[in-house]
Length: 481
Image (cartoon, rainbow, N blue to C red):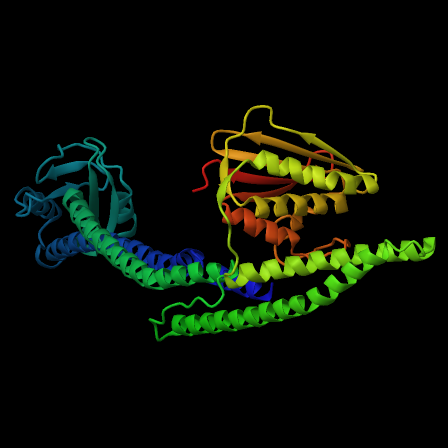
């Protein structure tokens, strides 16, 4: 039990959950960081391009307004005409529209696109007139719906009087195209980094999970009773240390099991001789007519307990033979129905003494012969009947039935006792396990039955029956070769 718990802890710690925990604690964190960095960088690119476009327009606007303020010192009308002429002959008209706008917001002239007399209502124009400073605006052209950016710079005459506004307008189509190209480059780079991280981590995880699966498989074999099996030592890291620990545990359990089996076998052999003598002399004394009633009753108790102890010794010897590989079957074609009926006939009279009713429901059709050991299967049937008798004393009833299909033969033995707690059903076939039961016995009867049935390529199934009691099913293959 102790070694099974230890192996379970190892399997829980190094199971397929490693992949999930690694992905959550490492890969997912890295990928999240890459995504966040890509988003931040994308925002930086957007800000960089838009700021650059706005700064370029503001520089042009400031250069133009400074020129007019510093070098054009004519009359108001000539100043106005110079601004008008500058706008009409703007050199960058192919990419930037230059508008000369009155303080009332009416377009006086434009390098291209906007007709004279058009009223501009965007916030940059109003802010430039009110503050006398360069202002910008970004939005959609109300006529075409195109995304644009505008920078308005007030043109001042002497005394700070605003003559009009130089308004530079450019389309953001090319800017947005550059932004999208840059963001796509960042996205592809991020995807490449995430793919590299993912596949390198998957390779690393596989290098961990693959040996762990091998260790888990071997650990499960150890838990199932293959004590002494060893895992190849192929690693010089923590996994290698775990392999060494499991191999050491396996060897120590194997040695302990061997010592235990040898001890049980030795003690059982030593007990057989005195038990045989006690039983023999007890049966002889039973024929003595001089025995009074009380002495005869005491002798019957002694014989019954001697037979029970002899049965326990035989079970222990049988189990040690199974453990050390000395257990063999004498396989022959047999009628399993006949063997079951003989076992019922042998046990029915004993059950009557305890006032337990044994009911038998035979299979009505002809059963096929199977390959099996009649003596060993009879041992299984008698052991299961004996186990049912121990638990059926409250219900006073045992039902035995047979059924078959093309592949399997089913022998079911049901008692009407208290059944077995659900959390113990999977454990009662383990050697020496008795659970919460207070019944006397070695705790290996069902373990021996399970081994014998397994040697016949069958299965021994236990379940609590509806309405109370335990139902034991022996499932034997029709073709057991």
